[in-house]
Structures are given as C-alpha cells and as structure tokens.
Length: 147
Image (cartoon, rainbow, N blue to C red; front, side, top):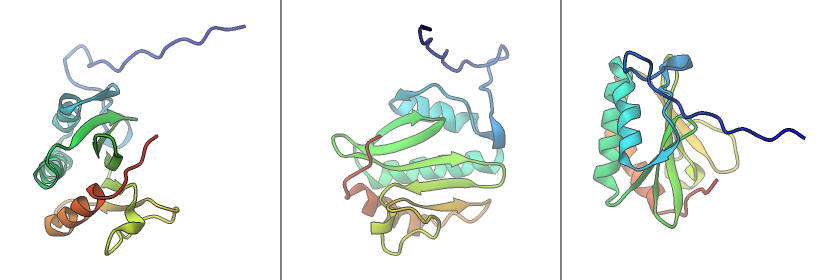
C-alpha cells in the first residue's frame, strides 16, 4: 500500500517573486492570518492589485476583528467561531468576490445559482464600494461557511 505524501508548500521563485497561476492568481501557501493575505495582494499586478487592496481595506474597515486566511490560493475573510463569509479569486479578466451566504444578502449579488453562495465579478473600474460595504456588513452578521 502506498503511503500518501504531503504536497510541498508553494514557494517563491528564485527571483523572490510569487508564482502566478492561470489568470494571474498568486500561488500562496495555505495559512491563517493577515500576512498570507497581504502576500497574495502584493503579488497581484495592475488593476487587479488595486481592486484587491481596496477590497481588503473595505472588509477590514467594515468588520472589526475580521479573521483572514489564504485557502485554495484565495483570501478568505470570516469571524472567529462563525466561519467564513467572503472570499475572492483572480481570473484573467476579473476578480470574483464570493459571499458564502449570498442568497441572504439584499439585494443578492448577481452571480451564482447554488443553494447559498452568490458572487460578483469585478472588472477594472467597476468596484462599487458602497454596495460592497453593504454586502460585507450583511454577510459578516450571518453564520459563516465552514469547510
């Protein structure tokens, strides 16, 4: 019987830069805390980096004591003991912001057909901070998702 082996953690390239996966999504090792989220955000280039910085600041400003982590090469935001309420992931042409209990938000974000999750795809220059702040505050007040 074969013994399972652990996958190595993602490492920066020899030049110190983070490996970017398809769509420019940074490969960041799974970890809890602000540091891995900031490493993810710092690795993004151009307008996607700007959107990620604004989104991170918006969540931190809207939810005191927010918990952060990187899982599956995506930043996650949650409340300790309640689970995760939001994650985002970068693709070639947009940044997908997922609310795990999005069907409970008013108005519900436009993307998604699943039982609970809804998302919005952000393109360059279309970050509506007022609407996103409303969704973030609503989402943080709901029971979160636990993997």
